[in-house]
Image (cartoon, rainbow, N blue to C red; front, side):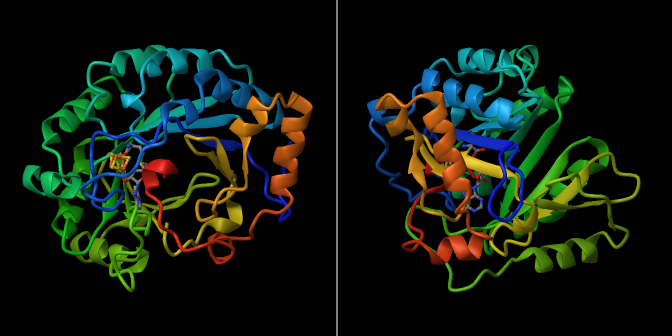
Length: 326
Ligand code: SAM
Ligand code: SF4
């Protein structure tokens, strides 16, 4: 089993399969985009599958495919199929912007994708265009309909942004009235490819909750699943739930069970660290499984206690979240 130097077990791997994306979300990338990794520098599907096969017997039983936008990578469904055959992997989840996902939802179900996180920051077409800089609102809503229609457990991820989508918070909670969907409001982090947008965060988890309580006085706390990054709530009588993720305030590091691998193979033992070692390079230099395992154990023996310590150890955050996977 994989434990870090603070006694936390690692059971969850987030794989960012590409840094490419067809949207330009304000909080993730500058309008002109970012310089993408050369294709030959991306991890191959074989390399990613090898890592998943290596970590599964060490207790990593949950995997999330993210990006960039996973569906812009060629043959992504074949990759899901390969992952679905790995023994010991109990849950394979997907995070997607939903613009290229409609029409594939049945395939996701067939391949045993356990749940989908759909990124959707607004229910207003015009605001969608302003935030993502692309006119793709209808496609995302079609994807949402298909996910709900097929009964796939679905979470909606909405980044909360001063001056952009505050008017959406109440309508998004309203979505949970008739749909069994989890809407999660996420504090904005400075991973936009340019560095922090603001001197301080206007909408932290406390203010988000106060806003929801003002409009839904009956909203009540519900138990959080193990290792949850969200604090979870429900309006009595509503089918779905509401979560708040203190991604910038970092209130959940004490129970963090996750590691990340970037599209070019950097292992991150914390979202806020700078990358610990490059797994792809080790693989391409011919490392044995034993050597790879030793590298993971070594990295976890030096894991930062929390996101603040990780951030203090590095140069200032400049990168885009599409190079990390969220
Ligand atoms: N393209 C896919 C999508 O948008 O769902 C997957 C990758 S995206 C980087 C993963 C998640 O990170 C999304 O839910 C997105 O909202 C979130 N994210 C991106 N930049 C963020 C930021 N600066 N602060 C908070 N969340 C962010
Ligand atoms: Fe693309 Fe996802 Fe980043 Fe938006 S958040 S630009 S959809 S990678």
